[in-house]
Image 1: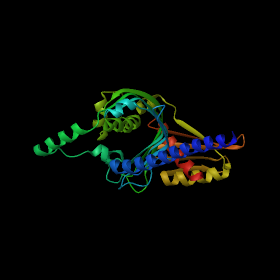
Image 2 (image 1 turned 90 degrees about the horizontal axis):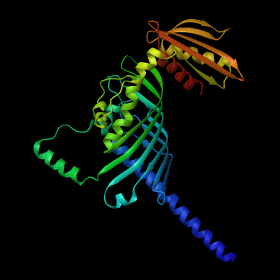
Image 3 (image 1 turned 180 degrees about the horizontal axis):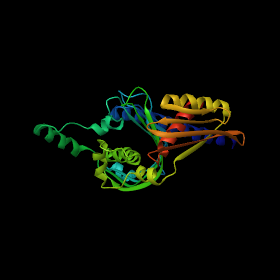
Image 4 (image 1 turned 180 degrees about the vertical axis):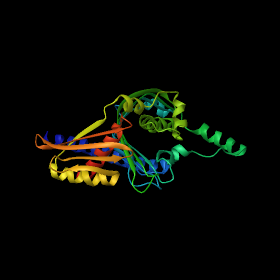
Length: 322
């Protein structure tokens, strides 16, 4: 009886090990192929394939900037869940009944030439219009591609970090707390999927004229940029807590503000400062609260609240205090 139990346990562990090895191989393959197709480094921390459940779970999915941009991430996805139709796959068709994507942070970088990082991805650039003979070959190639269908796509975006290097060596940094949830139906190509996921943050940040908008237009969705409502109707401040002391945080804040703009006033006794950043009047206050340092930053330009500038200061401060 004991011997039978040991054998059964070994068999179970063996299958489990094979499953782990399979998932690791798939993770490495997808990372390599994805990096090549997108033209940017793609990484996944975890990958799990449930054959019986017909589902895929991806954790720690990140896409870095393409060549020609500073180091940084375009997207940081803590979790992606995909339900797939195994029967359809056996028939040569990719059918995904449901896909859920959670984006913790989206990074929009504009280089010194005024080009956005998302517009420099291969999947966005595509190719120039081919010659007649090449178009015929392209149609034949497309005909051989597997049909692709997502019934329901759910996208959840946390925040957008915009860094503009076109004005000088130091970037203009703005952060948009988007907290946007949106559903799409009948997504019929991987390129359209990429267009939807990458264009939504641009709309949220109010960035216009991007190449990727043309791809996203395939979804047939039209809506106003979220940032327009945030800027006019939102509050002018943003706040965060830090584990460091008030003195340490305030010193870091002074360095950040001097790097981002011009310091106009500082008071170390009250841990308060004022500055001009991106044409906006910025005020920062740090104070001890419940064993932590609470920082509030407000920003206004032409009497209008600019929470994205305030959040940008906090974002840089969080990087400096790490």
